[in-house]
Length: 482
Image 1 (cartoon, rainbow, N blue to C red):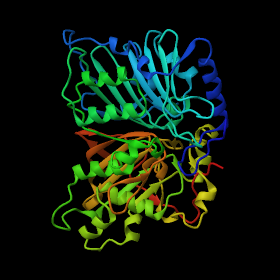
Image 2: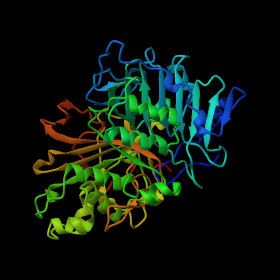
Image 3: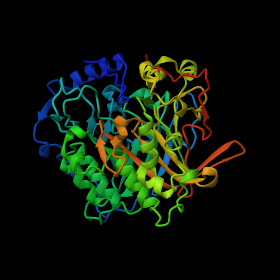
């Protein structure tokens, strides 16, 4: 299998992880697994669990949605952190849909009861594995390899869960792969929302349920699973889904160029901050966008400028009109702050190489004369001497940057994840990866007496990094992966 180092998409994994994944896949491909070419056969029985409205109501642990951090090895448990077992609640779980870039099946499978049905969407090497569905003979575990075009690198980065219990479903969007280190020695972030399930009732579709079904179909999830969304009450969900789908999938991006990546983010921003008819009414001049990811490709000034514009739901031409050309192109891309671990942080983290190998920046990218060095900012992890694998975007505007929106999910801050876009229309021109995440609207940001306060829907949002970032000094370099 090839070494998956990709400076364009920001996706790379260690050779040992690759070999381990291959060994586990070979185990799953033994005589207990069958290949299904017709996905309509997959997922059978998935719709048969879950109770009707006649069953006693269950109190939902997270009815309004909540952000949590993954619990890190050796740290004292707090209400801000959860382990994978905390999220899964395996003793109550009936069936689960999971997606991941990297899969450690030997580590993951024992976390579920033997009776729990699993559908797992994963990345794969199209030169060695076919697209389609693999299923155990007893039908308990279904593995899905979504459709890829001719790809040099792994591109399936989406990380989501749908966890089905007797009376409710737990939706999870996160930055964590289904591997041990992502849930123990790397800091990841998780969004959790619990929703009522009633298999005897079809609920009125919402923006969230429609977008979720689209996202599942894009990942080639069987219709038996997708149809279950119709029986989930999503009326109290307050987040917006953002996905990316590779341009090479063809019709998705060609015919729906505003439905994915940065263009989808712009559509959400337009809803949150409608463009005023009178120029100057939108506080563009006090807006900054803070972006952190665990992999950094080759950002350009044009990519940074476009991301700033799209985060406000506008093209560059519209930004100039709204600011009466007061905001120069240079000032626009300088308003995007790219947080990334320094090489010193990578070397001094308390978990050593096993943690550092997941923080990716190629030296030849950084030392290219076009690299926007001035955009780099040092971040301080919430847990000292650790490394952050979370992917977050904070759009902060207004005096003191006290309000805006927050993104969390699988998108690293790369063009491969978010896409290249048009400067005259809110349209994608190219995107490389499958990605999945959510936008939290109407977020408040404050730092009081040195302590960060991020609030959404009246509840605290724990952050994997502190809110105060500082520019790289002359002696700072990114955490290099080579």
